Amino acid sequence: MRIIMLGPPGAGKGTQSSKLARRLQIPQLSTGEMLRTAVEEKTPIGQSIDAVMKSGGLVSDEVMIECVRERLGRDDAARGFILDGFPRTLFQARALDDLLEARGTKIDAVIELRVDVSQLLSRVEGRAKESLANGGQVRADDNPRAFERRLVEYQKSTAPVSAYYAGRMQMASVDGMQAVETVTNDIMAALGFQ
Ligand code: ADP
Image 1 (tube, helix red, strand yellow):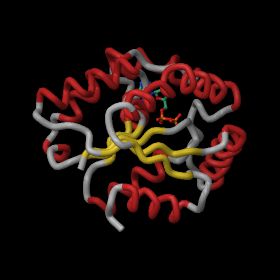
Image 2: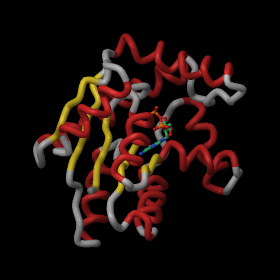
Image 3: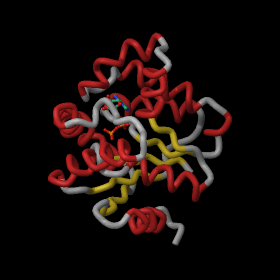
Image 4: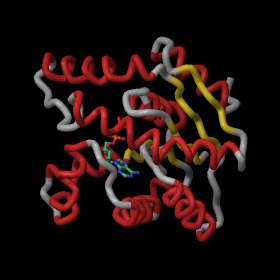
C-alpha cells in the first residue's frame, strides 16, 4: 500500500506514520528525517539546506524530488510506503505522480490529520521539553519563531496539496486531537483494515 500523510507541523504525522509502518510492515519515508540526517552528517546537500531548515522554510522542490526519487527506488519501498512530509507543494505532488507513473504504480490513500491551529505550537513545545527531559536533542526548528514560519509555509504551499488529492481520489480526514492510539485506529479504519 502506498500512503501519503498530510497535516500541519505538529499534527502527529511522524508519530502516526511510524505506528502505521509497524502495523502494515512497510517503510516510513520521512523527508524531515532524511534532511535532518543529511544536516547532521554534513553532506553537501545537508550543508546547503541547514539554514533554511533551521528557519522553518521549505527546502527546494528540486532537492526534495531527487531525494524522494532515490528513496523510492530502494528495494524496501517496492511493496509500499508511507510518505511523511512529502509532497509539501503542488509541484512536488505532480512530480510524485510522474515518478510513480513511470514505475507503473500510484498512491492508494491520502490521510489528512486535522488538529486545531491553536494546539500546534504547544504540541511542538511539548515535544521539545520531552526530548530534553529524556536527554535528547531539541529540533533546531522546534521554537516559536521557526514554528511560525513552518505554519505559514504549510498554509501557503501545503494546504493546496490537500485540494489536489481531494479532486483525484478519496481522501480520509482523521481527527488528530484524540489519543495517539485512537488516531492510529481511525487511520487503520479509513484504510479499510478494521
Ligand atoms: P514538521 O513537523 O514541521 O512537519 P518535518 O520533519 O516533516 O516537520 O520537516 C521539517 C523540515 O524539513 C521542514 O520545515 C522543511 O524545512 C524540511 N522539509 C521536509 N520535507 C520537505 C518537503 N517535502 N519540501 C520542502 N521542505 C521539506
